[in-house]
Image (cartoon, rainbow, N blue to C red; front, top):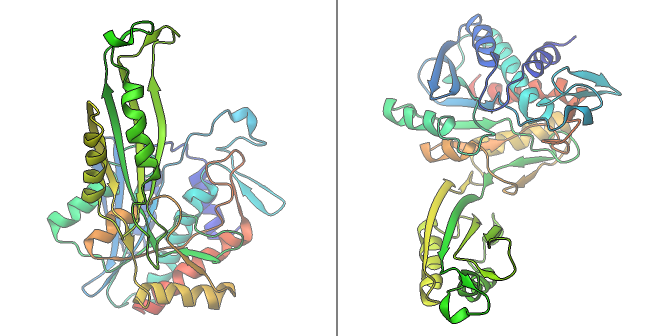
Length: 377
């Protein structure tokens, strides 16, 4: 059995549902410590974070990932138990196989091999893991580690995120940026009353409707060469008592922007408030900016290196995308780092019977190793 497959099996067996790391990072830290890495365990709140580095001075190349996984859903729906990894027809099944314990194992193995082959390598390599990537807030994971790095003046030059980026074959797509995410909880205030006496009530649904129509029709920006136009979505609206003859006294709506570098979060907030105010809506609106957009520019050292590695080792011309949701790269990019995401096929992530091709898993360490070698050997 290969080193990466053996390590992936070990990681999958650990029931590390957010924020429980289930011992994954202790095992990884001990393993990297044996080949000379300086290992730090950064625990904030209930979240475990692992920071391991090798080398002195010069540029810093970091491999970033997470040891936590999403819940399995009904385990009876799985063909085999989700935390008992099983190989069938060339595919490794188990929760986290693709997102992203396979990548975590591949990064660890690649780093072991790199420092053993190049003990006096240029610069530094780093391995950063969190147990709070899949959680709803991400307060004490990489977001908090990034704040710690600012306090300690730790500078990252390049960051490879092991998120499952590929579409149908390994290396066919890399993420070179991500859109920002700005969410809002909108509470509209009305006056409850009988539907037969609307003059004695104030319907928050009616009050919001014209403003909401304007917001959903708004063209927020035109995007740019690297990003599609900013999108505005309403993910939930709740109002009413459940009775047909009662005008509700309150409404709550959840809204979200996925925005590009063509817009700023402050401007989007201001435009929403302007629409609501213009329509005379009585409201409170609480905002949560979970991440700014980021982009690794074309021609950047890391981006160019990853593209060439995919060409040379996978035989594909990778699509260079900024699509998808968010990743922890959004917390590292503001430190000044060039960030690129490269990982296995993402077709089954978060699904029942999540899996990764064994052949892809066994090739992945070579890709990460080649990035290290081309940048720091």
